[in-house]
Length: 429
Image (cartoon, rainbow, N blue to C red; front, side, top):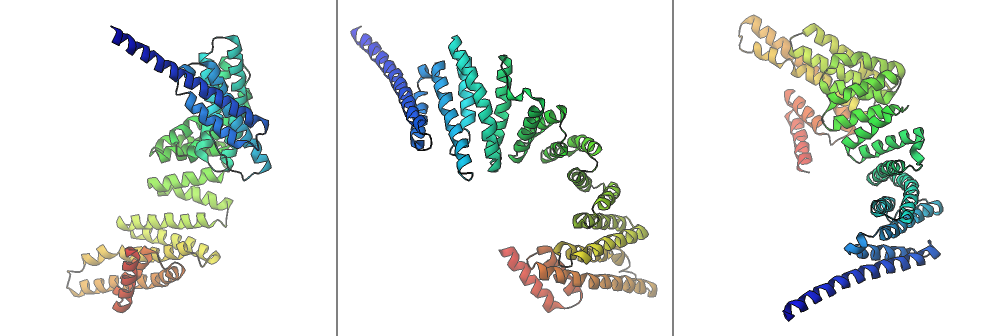
């Protein structure tokens, strides 16, 4: 019986020791924080020490269940974040030592409020939450400036939560202003998108839309987020709504163009691209895209045996490519595209050539030679554009393949082998 009693006493002593250590670490954190407060810019090491003691203290369950301990934690992290923001005023390039300090402060004050029973603790927790709400905005802005979109998103999204907690407790929030609330939804969604959290981006930006945003980017990023989730069709209504509301916004227009390109609905693209070109007559991207659309249409028509329509599309594609080349003759994509236009048309004649290959009659041979010569002529027309493209970018795989094939068809095997060797070296690297 005595042995059991000794074990119990020993167990109680260990528990008391853990509690004492937690209290001791909490006091050490408060003391180090006081040193920091005397001169925040000179005593940053004291703040780091305070935070280390704080983490140690909260390993003790008794400390972790004490609202006053959480108030202390909230205050320390608040001052950490506040000093970082103020430091940026003196040195805008200074790194944020803890970009989530405001988030940690908010979480601590929120926990203090959940545990608090005394009026004084409740009052202090709500006051801390109001301060944390402002700091969350400021630190989110600083992280955004650094292009640290993940931490900016965490700050902005937690600011929205802080606002909800304050309003639930009948306290004022900076986001009571409807314009600021819409702006916060927007930046929460924007930073979530850049941080590749696409579902959250959609949720926040839909809120921005519903609270009255006047920013066309909202509609574009909602669509792009659905696209990133492989749900383009679900995002299309938002894109169409944005186009209706902001008909002159180029970002929305090009998202719509890319959507129809990706879905293969090329016929729908023509009017949209021509409209874009009316707005920006010298926009090389639009001109090139129009050429590409007509290029793809001519390939589809040729495959379907629609010879006349294929020729019509071919001429339209060449017209747009040539127009663009007049402005930028050294553009790799344009030179390659014109070369590919001729090359693909020639390659598309292969089925017709094969169809008469076994016809050894006089008429069959004549037809075979006619098609073969037409193909050779098209390859010859493609050649200078591929050579120009190769001179601009000598490491493009598709250009080297085209040159290798054309030279082989022209029976210039030495040149064909040269391109083959370059291709093999490129692929080996």
